[in-house]
Image (cartoon, rainbow, N blue to C red; front, top):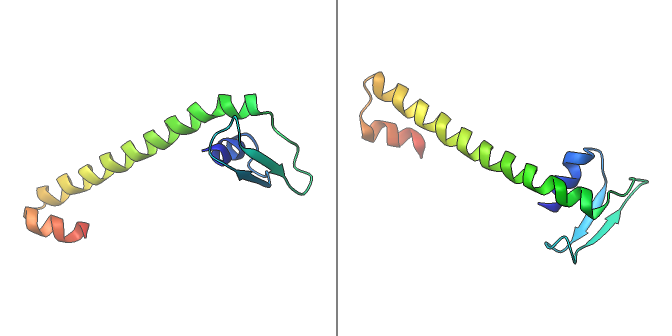
Length: 85
C-alpha cells in the first residue's frame, strides 16, 4: 500500500520500501527521485485504499451484469458457470 500511495503522488518515483508499516519502514529513493514525506504518504493511503475497494466493487458489478445478460439470452446457470471458469 505504501508504494501505491507513493506512486499516486509521483507516478515516476523510483523507490524501494522495506517493511509494511509506514512508521517503521525504510524508504530508499532512487535516481534523483525527490523524497516524499511520510505524512504525505500517510494522507494518500486512505485514498488508495478507497480506489482499490471501488475497483473491486466495479469488477463484481461488471461480472454480475455479464451474468444477467447471458441469462437474458437464454443461457442456463450451468452454461454461465462454464464461462466463469
